[in-house]
Image (tube, rainbow, N blue to C red; front, side, top):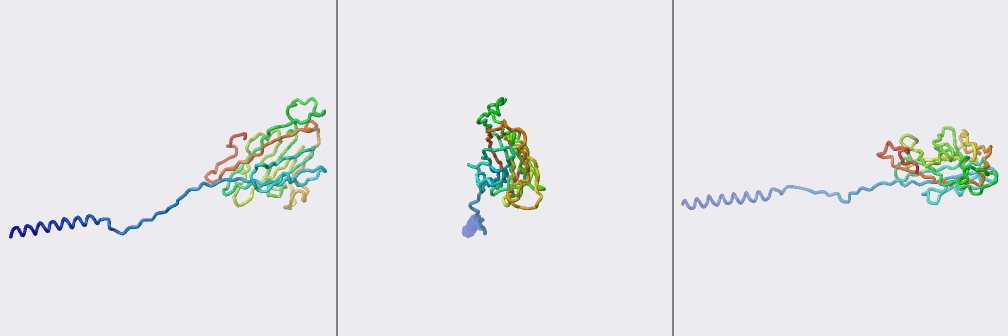
Length: 267
């Protein structure tokens, strides 16, 4: 009788232990769910500056006409030139309007021009006694003005210049601000930014147009500047100037203090 009771007690303990083991093995059996997001990526944006240009120049009769050789639609600048003029005379004037497009991201923009050579070409009798026979003198008589244009190729009342000066003193490769944190309005992906450019073989004087017309300078009869070529420029005969024109664009996002003067100068 005692043995039977002991066996029952031991059997009950064994069942308790077994039941406990089962309970312990089942502790992870709760409702659950797993969600996985696949293919997460980061892709860098880009600044892809492209430029177009519309050009006008004085012809052989002294009349301002379109210059198709210096006009092109939106593209990179490979193989493009803003200046390719020959047989210049004192009093000649030209005008270009450049349009800048930063691509998919808003950007600050800077511009620089650097003279790379000043060929003397043919030394004429009028240039005898030239103190610098290795270089020409044309750059001493070429004067320029750059302004924020509205796209009609004419300097008008209310428009602002951002660079005025002679080729001999300003074509040094220094970066000039078209738009940075302290000058102008940043290039936007949704609107065009225009830079007007006038040059003169002689004295260039602003004469901003106030007609209110929004038409080209040939039809309007003015570029918004006058050019006077009086004086003695004989030492510039047959001389030339060769220059590189560069543009730089940098993102505006997370870059609110950028200035063109912070770039390495000259180019």
